[in-house]
Length: 326
Image 1 (tube, rainbow, N blue to C red):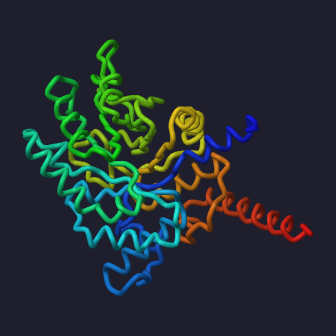
Image 2: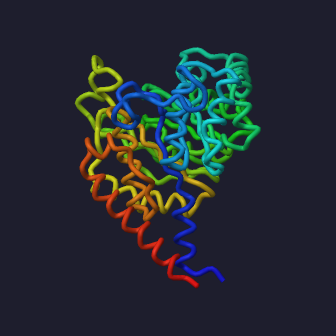
Image 3: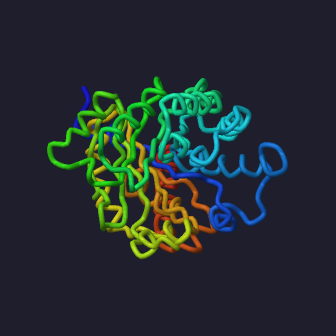
């Protein structure tokens, strides 16, 4: 009979921690060695394969974000699959192309065509059972309306049967009595809970489930850059969460996981390796075993050294226990 302790552990294991993207120039020398390995083949493709392989060694999943800018060819997705072969349980989510979510005018036919192209490009991951969810991220200017809901419905239905999580950032979608969440439930679509800089019409942190999959994304809280139209991408996502800020999310993630089959917690505050640093801290806060932490991250973020030391002690203790068994 499953005890309450077993149930709590099961809930924790349903939370999959990962990062958004894995190939950033500023991660060299921090997350990855300055002289990168060519594991998986030589040249640029092999280097990127080595980067993804390292992410698979650290986390449970990764969110593919270059699909937002261009649809991958199937051989590229096959390369991603090869890079994570050493981690059978490692999975992917992927962002839907911006043409489907950000274009001001997109006919149902254009949405359907874009969706077909995306699914064809990701086919190797889909067939291997490694792609578990797609992320449809809509812009902050996207407000609740009948046309907006028709667009969401068109995207979700075009990507069927893959599960889709919908990220909206404008609080108009959660107005009392608006019926947006039941709308997502009828579509079988998930709701993305976001951590954003507070202000304007931004959504606050939530714990909303509308499907069998939960989703949370951490964008950072750099309000000065976030609302600055002249700020670049790196500036907007330059934010390191404190331990206290991450602790706020532990009960939220556990609540989401208690109502879902799986929950994806994705760190998107990528600049200078802050996303993997915070994702590792989240793993520790959830009581999960930590992998060896890259030396560059340990050097830049000293708080990780304490986590690394604790993880090493735990591995030594486990080794002693196993050695003591008859």
